[in-house]
Length: 313
Image (spheres, rainbow, N blue to C red):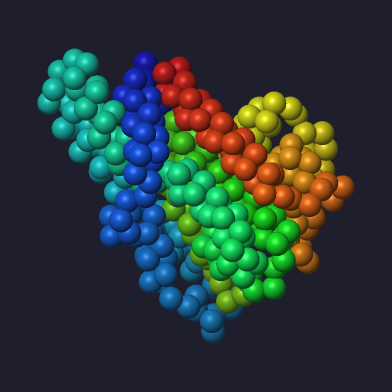
């Protein structure tokens, strides 16, 4: 009996390995072929969220818009899934399963991003070698906050925070949702996470984006804690006080991978005016960034292995 949340088996495990191999070898596809870029453009096309409407009306309309686009993303992913299954089904036996895994992995890859994250974080540290302003400019590629007044320590802290949080958002969580819900599950998660990043912020989008923010909170709840576990395992020790530190952030999920990395590195990570994680820790150095990248890489490999095991279970 094949359970609804386990649709692929051996070909699913192969798809994870193929997606990982493509990511490692080539990184991200061009923007014109990137489904996450398409999602971002669709979300942007909604324009200003009805500024004259009441907060309740903005929330309702935002929820309706989110649900409509979520259904479209899932439907497109399901259609791609069926097309891949039909193409592979024409070849009997192991050859068909292999083709299914190869095609599925190629379509899954754009929903995952480890190489880009690793390279962007490393690029921030390389830029700091040319000066603080160069580091600030490079950091803008991976964070949405104002970087113009950040000093070298906060720049490194921000890069480490982005590494740990986006390890969940762009790798562990979509892999887990792929293992549980197939290609439609991974597509739904990447849509929800992108919508949260674009809509679930304070300001003019606040009420329209509350549904997006809460949906991402729900879908990221288990993956964020799994990411924390994988980071701790990759570092070789369990960080004491993790729950306490994770609760210092406003996000119910983002604090878990960030606090784990802070504790295993024994460094302080902060966003001035918002939170300080592991306040007793050292100031982050270039050595800490290099070590964090090694730990995150091991966690990324472990996440891929876990997704394969879930497919084969």
